[in-house]
Image (cartoon, rainbow over all chains, first blue to last red; front, top):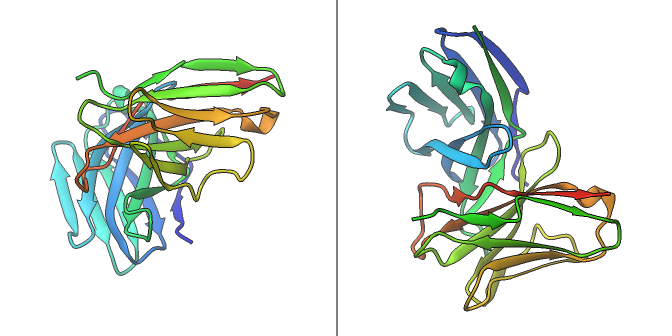
Length: 114
Length: 115
């Protein structure tokens, strides 16, 4: 089945860049997503990338996709204390009966130190 | 547009009781998805529904769990005879009828605690 892996923790200093990494196994993945979850809250979609792209930039966020290695990363420039949260990588794929199923990683807890 | 509304936000049930979790999708969205998040884990797909129709329930436990999305009213995730292992956050997401590539809109979740 599909599998998505992430490292569990990342600490950075305020103002530095954060890089959160993710690997996935399903070569038929169509879209890959990054979600942010703050304590006690739901998931907020940060950005997504189509599998035939290799990079997407959106303000402080840069997504890099290496399709050959099935590796996805999220770079947050000038990290702020408000960026402290859990970040989930997710992939979607077309499968019979479930065109829009998402498979999530376990999340990376980002801690931003002052 | 109020977004995806889930209630209650927190639910406490004793072992053996029933839990009913409600989800109202965003306006114009006719597709609903339920996901479960166990402590310190990612979200796991449970079920995908359209109005009056279950499309994919491959992630639903075989017993005690059921879901519906009636023609009128919210989608309901029902857990009968809850056990401690059902304690988790349950998230609902919705999307419009056409295939959406922009990810789903998630609600804030219902945190179920079984005591």
